[in-house]
Image (tube, rainbow, N blue to C red; front, side):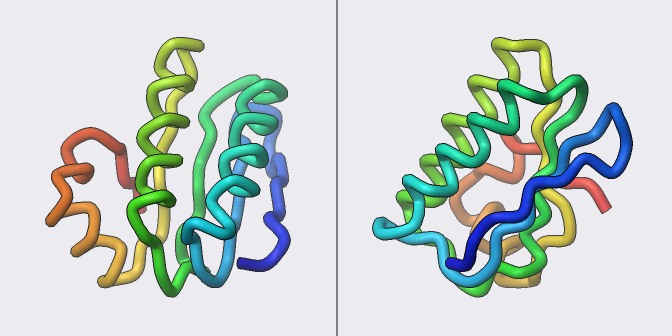
Length: 103
């Protein structure tokens, strides 16, 4: 996974763009980046997953944990631009019903 890029294109949406692989070695950095983004967010947090080529169970656990934290804070958490691989992964694991995916 490369360094995550968190940006705020508007004052209401925070976008984080990881790239590469999310696995047991990189999921901790993703979790920290997303939690920091949540702490400074004033609106929805969007995870642009277009740059991901792989995500294992530790990465999925990060998504679930961040989604729960965001919900408890009243912040919307969503994924955007998933590859067919990510769409399939979310569907097979049932996370497509729990985590919002936006175009």
